[in-house]
Length: 210
Image (tube, rainbow, N blue to C red; front, side):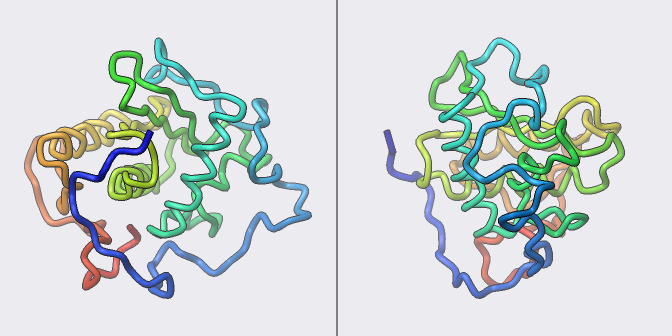
């Protein structure tokens, strides 16, 4: 079921380049380091964490369908892992990091909301904040492309800065829920807002990762 989007957005040329949209093609067909896109290999993706506990975790075809859509949205918004030089969705297929990537669950208290939990490759991953925030902006900024009114994003608690990152993500989520618009500014855990270097890509004058 697809609802009408309740905020306006601007379309952009697919030729616009963004810093994390690397031209490298890591994980190409025939590379044994990766599972095939569109497959579901439980031993090569993270187990659901605390943020997904008690909710309806997507598996098999349901997981594949949403993750393939995520790949498309991440490509449009330039949500790339700068270390590996690939679309963040590719991390779920990277056999070198079988316990990293995204898992999803439909919120048990609100079936119009999806929970997404990101497990970085290491507990000190310096990109965790940027990647989780970029994912939030892609999923919610392009909400008309999927069936959920809200995609809630959190970083797994194993990351050393997960508490601060998740507080900032929760603030973004609250502002989005109130206004129906993905905020253009970052919100610090203390509640102070400021212009972010990850400004919303919906402004074509801003050259940012997302």
